[in-house]
Amino acid sequence: MTTTLAPPVPVGKAAVGALGMLALSTGALESVVSPTIPLLERELDMSQSEGALLSIVLLITGALITPLAGKFGDRYGGKKVLIRLMAVVSLGGTVSALAPNLPVLLVGQVLQGAMIGALPLSFIVVRKHLPAGESKVAIGVVSGLFVGGSMVGMLSAGPVAEQLSRHWMFALPTIAVVGSTLLVNRLMPADPPGRSDGAGIDWPGLLLLSGMLVTLMLVLALAPEAGSAPLVLVALVVLLAVLVTGWVRVERRAAAPMIDLNMLARPAIWKACVLTFVICLGTTMAVYLVPQLLDERGDGYGFRASATEIGFYLLPGAIAATLAGPLGGLGDRRFGSRAVVNTGVVMMAVGLLAVAAVHTEVWHLVVGKVLIALANGLCVTAMMTSTATAVDPNDTGIATSLILVSRVLGSAVGGQLGGALLTAGTPSGSEVAAESAYVTGFVIAGVVVLTALFVTRTMSKGVKA
Image 1: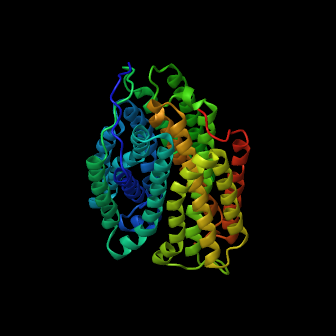
Image 2: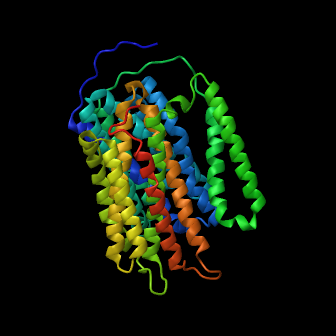
Image 3: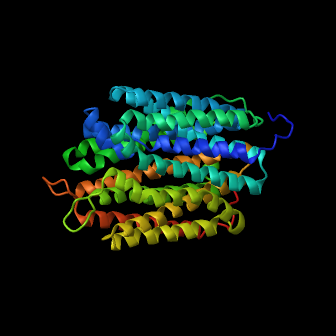
């Protein structure tokens, strides 16, 4: 039933700024593991398979929590759910910072995965307190700072772990998360709860979705070594197909499905999800390949850069990613989502293909990475803001959570694909990947991103869900 409530209290720049700080700190905490997997493997005596597991635990948890957080935020109020969710994230960051071994660190990462659900909750709060035009810009700012925070975490994790310890690379962003959460709690007024249909949680759907994501990640992790265990890979692919079929049937029959397939079937929503998946796949391949090429020690290619030098080289890209959020929101409001996404897709493809063709100087990679980071921020922000402001306010959380799940899946596939190409391109007995492996990776990413133009052609100038 729907309850009529008093109009929400307007929010000022300080409250939106607090949400932005929270997005920045959670983005940083999310990304510290990926660039430090080799270091963690050495310090915790981990095998490569254990390292792969550590790298995907947070993504799996996030993909599961995000639609649940969006649904609860729509139902009970975004701020109320956000503060409780960030308490779980803060606990996870603390556990990760104090972890003496891999099992404890895995527990911390599982708890930290709840942070990905913070974005749709932030959008719920903004949407309920600001007019449509201002909310687009505010959502763009929050989205951009989350992307920028991810870059900051990726850049700083290595130097912090080397100069201080692996414990501090988790502790510092966790402290920032706690502080920004307290600011949000103080400055942001409570938003009214939305409609409640009285239905409970879709536990069967959640269980099947969990199985799907875990199986998908295992398939991606084992694909590069399929020749040594082909039957295992085939069995996992069959299991994945069974789980997908079962999940679709359960969600169609559920009174309150975990992921609303009817909403996903809307042209505006599925197009936004497809675009987000493709764009994040291309972006993540670059995020993986560029630092690897900077670190590479090949004959005539690579730059033998240290972790600190790599962070310095990638800093312009982090700045571009941060600026892309508000620029995407402004562009979407003035020109429409289709124009912003088309611009971003072309910009990203140019950056990827240019790096594939020319990568003999550090500045080639720096400029290419800036184009890729800026384009990714523009595209994802345009998709997020247009989707968030096109659906009914009570559906903001679940609609944007679908975009975020697509982002997580695209990032996971892109990272695994980049790693598989370098593994396949490394000669037996060598630790140096062939230059052709990098070229192939950038070309594939550029071509995949260009396929997004086939989808954008069918979009209206503004998304209408």
